[in-house]
Length: 359
Image (cartoon, rainbow, N blue to C red; front, side):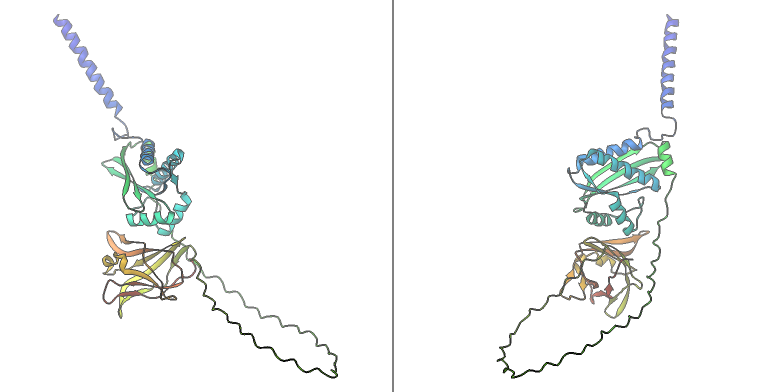
């Protein structure tokens, strides 16, 4: 009897040890997150969550994904876009339109983008929602986060998070790293064309006219009363809408507070359809005050009765330090402006801004 009990206990212990060994083998290998998904599964799940939370037919744009690798970021955006297109529940903005805006705002697929910039880009694209995301590493484990922001209200509509397995695909995508931002080549002015002298005009020979003698001429008729024609003044034509593109200023229009020069400049202007974004740079002490966009207006210098109020504004930061401010205007027409801030005494007025052809 004792022998039978001993054999039974030995078999039970052996089974338990075998089970532990098999579980250890199951979690061995490069997959460091035992509770995570594959990257493709996480992206597909995020797409389903977005389809469920966003109103059908809404226009949505995939803007950027922050990660240590451009290759990883592009893969996530492409796969997420493909999943959303396959479901046909939402309208996805064409990637080419997003790329144009991304180039003008000078940010990468894998960089960080503030909420203010996200809203501005969304309005320029005509999208109701903007998708952004990020990859976070904690002790060798990876977590993917995808967020959907409402363009009008800045409310977060979807916030999906999931741990992902650090498998070969993830490792290969992260191995790419980031690429440098391509700089715009300097634009050279068109070469001057030689001016050609006009060809001399050829005069036709003067022909002699026959002399006609009038015999017994009739008296001149009584002249009729003059007819006075009153013409209405011709209205001045409205200037055409500005062409799309970026305008960089050299030298940059500077701000003045009264007679004192201020370290604030108009760096560049971006025009995209009916929207215009003015970017200011410099270390101006009133950047916080400039956040009150109701005190800022763009004055048309050719039509003093016409001015434009910002539709939206945001702060430009670099390394956690404020570097400037941007303002978005809508339906701006004209070519000569001054940006004015009335929230200080004396008010801050920028030098004349002349908007020519794009760079």
